[in-house]
Image (tube, rainbow, N blue to C red; front, side):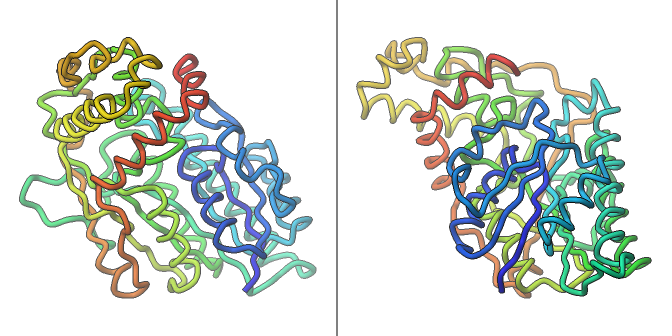
Length: 358
């Protein structure tokens, strides 16, 4: 089946990785990216596909309903994959308004455009459509150490402005399916990591701080637990939902990788020490790194005051996706983090400008 996809927010981390994955696996499909290029959007993320004749980039805002309707019509879009979101929890605490605007009002604008073109307009109405909404495990709240992992029926209990805004967008997508018949699916994923990860997030921040010899800040006691998902495994999970998912359903996509923050940082430090030991050229390229000076990278670990509303543990139960879609992650955390570290070590020209502006 050939598709014409509109992918929102795909100049960002997860969306751009999905574009790379999809265009590699689906050689006949056309992909249109809509992105506002806010602080986390980076056109360089799309360099691998920018010259492909099956690809088009459009600079625009998902809240511009007229623009979205025009794209749905002119590009004959049948599949909309919605990644666009404000997603950094710390930023949502200091400035929640942008999260309400993008995550709630922006999602609603997309839904209205899809309803208008795919359901209400006699000239463009079609049963062959799909609106896939990408959400997060943070909508489910926080878990204690011995609590069972989040399932698709776990009650929502968001604890930050970010997760509250994503929860609201999830409910809007569900409502447009049940009220208007829009063909939707939703995925709630665990923490992603991998290539093109914006440097303000935990894993890329620590990798790049190490290379600059800067402290590795750990909130509280460092025992907060997250389930980590390699970004290419996430892309494959969405692919399976689009191909096999039941309309109106929600699917959790997880990595089966629960790690405490402090253990993640220690693993990265160990891998960085090993990388410098095996490649003498790294010391010349990154002289400020502790390993370049014969020191242990773990010496950079610094504990800082915990942030407000910091959820203790997230964990995804992905058995529904495994049972109904055949989904299992291909990467363990250890294999995925090695791929990620190697990518950052060889792509300084990509991340250095982003650190300077973030």
